Image 1: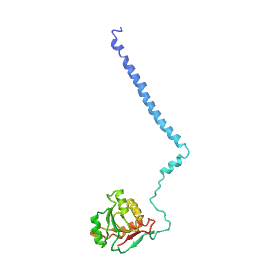
Image 2 (image 1 turned 180 degrees about the vertical axis):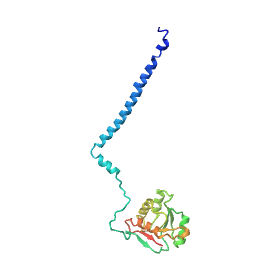
Image 3 (image 1 turned 120 degrees about the vertical axis):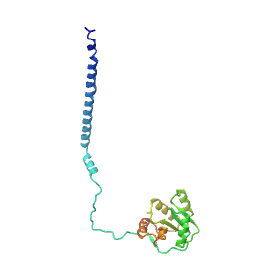
Image 4 (image 1 turned 90 degrees about the horizontal axis):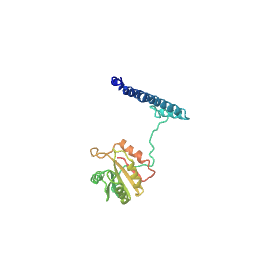
Length: 211
């Protein structure tokens, strides 16, 4: 009989395969997913029960910046100028002329336009390295005329350079200049930006030229 029913007796492996697939894999997968969801819920619930967590979550979810301003009834009428000093007219000559991120040829054109003479003309900042600017500072002395591009706001690199320069020289006159099309005359609103920044320096060695 076993020989005659050999084809039926050989079907046992299908039962074993499906039993293994169902009990060993499918049920374990569902148990794993259920345990994973339960673990996340348990961790979240346990964290929320810790002291200070609810306050921390409230602080995180509360916007710090509001879209409206509180009316304090106080208005600022003018900006404090600090130690900034203004010159209306440039001198005929300076010990050193420098230009922030300007070529020497450009500086000679500016000197001719401003009717200024100087034995030493240097371009600083821009593509100069820190060592190159430091060497120029070491060569500087007396009164320095420093041209800047009015349309470019003062950067921290410029302020650092200016602070190092005033430790070496007696006086620095910062001249914001406009474009060639504007005859190098800077707009007042641009000069005001430079004035506010320079006024933060705790020194009386820095002057600002207002056209």
